[in-house]
Length: 303
Image (cartoon, rainbow, N blue to C red; front, side):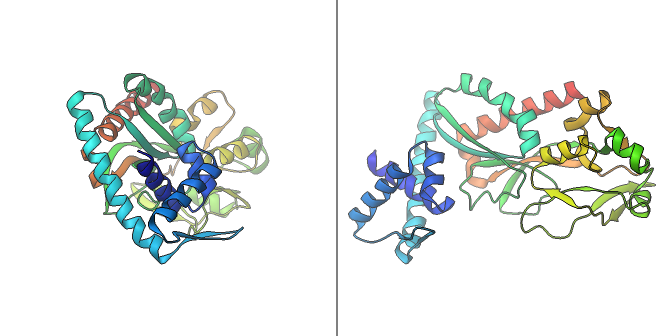
């Protein structure tokens, strides 16, 4: 199985762009990852990567080998999954991504129970509020928020989160209580912006009298981490747009207050996305079903 391990390492290095990142994903050191790549290169008699102290990029041979290696690993994975399904003992590794806040509150607590039921399935979970590219990052599935336009992925809709605009009592005491989106603009309120690198202009879509209206809000603070925005809102730095599920306890405790209640934000779709082929994989199917059911139960209990 050493050759398969070398192939898996090569694919992760190719997809993640570094030996250290691939090593972390595979739970080996960067030195071990590098050694496996060297073994492959020696076996093939070609260089698979151009390496410098600052960068690593695939050679032409590496580009070709990646396509073949992924097909080989997919075939191995499918055969192992079929065998595992027959023996009712699914095994292997799932690479999963989820938004930071919702991932911590909803998905992370459900994984220990899944691991107890299926001890031979390893889960590699990444939490981030940045935009995820499932295919290019070698993910088996991802939990995402917002409207989806990628037709290359299968989508399992989980729910639509109610969203609220909220701010701390100290912010309201200093800047006043906005009743609507128009107040946000007219009174030049400070908005806390969730934005990841490469994102386009920022705006909030609010419901006004049964219609949707776009507001090009602005503010001096932005982050790609939703929990950071919540902490800034608690510190009195501005108004934040959050799923109610994430801030309900803070609102109930009086640490945050709902604002612009006349024009609430549109609901936030929450879904699981995955490549078409992953539905054939028992471990992916079992994980998706477990997380979707668990999320819906937690949301109902918390609502």
